[in-house]
Image (cartoon, rainbow, N blue to C red; front, side):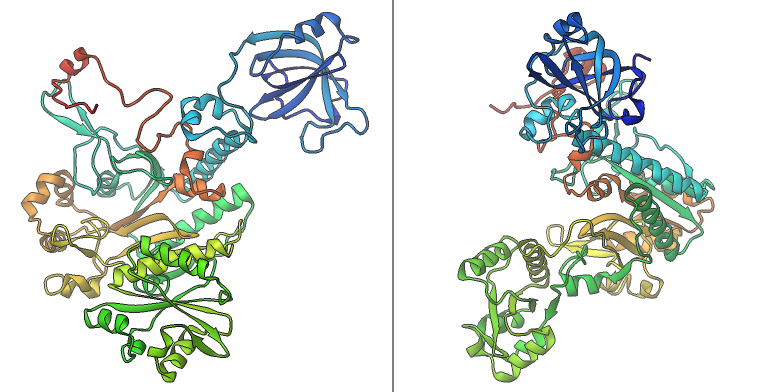
Length: 589
């Protein structure tokens, strides 16, 4: 090795040792003829000293050093002078006086700073990602991702799971998002797709007798991007045979407990809280509720239907609902604050936001004159409102009402700093509807996917009223973010046929799309189920952020492009000919 130690390793115990260090010139300071260099690698910083009284020739060589030069130094470890120690650095008690310098490579002037205090814009960071990744915070993020991956494997291996790789070139199957497709050179006119998930293959592994499977799987989906979504992402993919729903909860809670203890030294309390989908939507307006704070929602449709407030009465008459939220201690919100809340609710479809402050134990607002004393007392009782609280109302269709108030809940929590950093609140959301009605397609579509098992007690509704059918479906949320989702799978043909019929797909059509999975079920498929944990999201949340790009080495931008390598890019005509493709695309001006 070119080095004897890393730049984050030396301390007072190493004084008088002869060492060799390698790294990048992080900063250079010239103090009265003595040159101080902060030498950096991914382990930390070490101060190296070019002192003419120690070596004139080496000092002269040190004058040529610039930022991001890659160098090797041989020298002697010395204790820093008293009062000159840097307690912020692991190596802050020592410095290395250089006897020999070797410039391994020079560097142009970096277009972005390799400094956590000076962060470039996103495009520059992605174009020069190799420089951005040199920043200590990014080195920490990549290390954190590695540590979580290793802790995951350690836990899953201890539970007798096998890590099995599934293929990346597969048959195109409808799974919700758009596929990325790959042309075949040896099969003209035919295409592979890149997997949106290993869903079908992990189920086939259960048929194969591999009763406990996991994989840190790469998944690819051609969909619109946001801070917690990338075209290629990683999930901890898990499938088990001969299980019940509770087995998944116990396994995943154990995984989270192990990972958080191993990586953060945080002891998670298990079992995690559980809410049914109906409870989550009713109380929090979301199927991924953030439970670090209260601000619950209350359905007051039955109370206000007898009021004289025409807005509420008209909504209720047309099948809508009225819900409210008690923003505790917010009775002093100004008109500007209330306008801000109204505008935020409007973003999520609310046509208005009614409000009332609690003063002298009664509701005070322009709308209260349309509500009798009895109605006001009932609202105060249901919401638990006290003096100086603010009650906020939304009246609309159930979906809009829940969405608008649910998002308003998060907005107020952020405004009031109700969610404290370092708090991790997990929650299982269970008993999702198996189907949801698609207004665009005017038919029922699967809430998750068509292989999810209905609740046994709801089988009778499959043909009569699919809206009443709950699935053996479950999501795991962390601080208001969905970090995992899964289900118990259908493994019997008669049940599968009934589910397919609800969504307007006959068995023959299903066999065309998923034939290889359905064929395998003819040969003794065991009861099975599983879950997929969004690895990137989990890593980001453990790292205290929401933007998964900060924890992926080479992410794409919002346009699914990589500014560093220029992908996606045009290719040579010869390559297109090889895969039997002729372009007929109108290019944008």
